[in-house]
Length: 328
View (cartoon, rainbow, N blue to C red):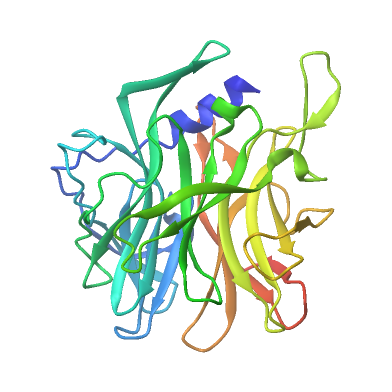
């Protein structure tokens, strides 16, 4: 199990140095783009879809079919804890109060923060950058650190509670706590930093569908929490997409808050909501009003490396539970 997830991490490394621009391509079909953790912002102001994900690069499209990119839009501070060439995972774009925010996970492989069960853990954390335009550049704000430096955190996403307070929801990585958590932390009103301490919402072991074999071959809950995304159905039900594993199968699940608030209690659906080997989903509405889920495929190529391609699904959210249709 440790080897499996180590290979996943290695295969998600950003290959673009921060000081080199990639070659821009045009009219690229979605299924020709290799991208983990895709996130699509449908920007009304520009009538354009902006897609980012692991690697932090940006793609643009007017119709979700023909894409242009990738553009280098993240300008991190090389003097910060991130170092000069960080990995960038699971970048997301959110518009909030007239500005655009890039929630991303940065890893500095040169800084080691812990060793657990023989595994050396690198400095990794979710962070927020800002821009006045959806296509960036995205730059740091006031606070250099949003989450504690001794914790490996990842896949930060954005949510505003009904009382108007903004939050980051993120994962405390299983490699350190051995039972990954989903947590929240309040953000400053302008998202320039965090307020107080994080709070656990649920743990990987709370899920009825995520499973693995332990060292003795027994079936036990999986350790991984990955890819949170918050939403409300049209009936007002608060839900969270998140991803884990069923043995060696990458799997998308969903949980719903019993209270309708972040604090839960979170009730997990008993079965995954997509076919096997899809995950890290998020929801967005097209300019025509159709609700779609974007996630990525998960397969292994001939060279043993993971192949991850963005995939769209139609979604029905008219009831208290979302219903995910077939891949488009």
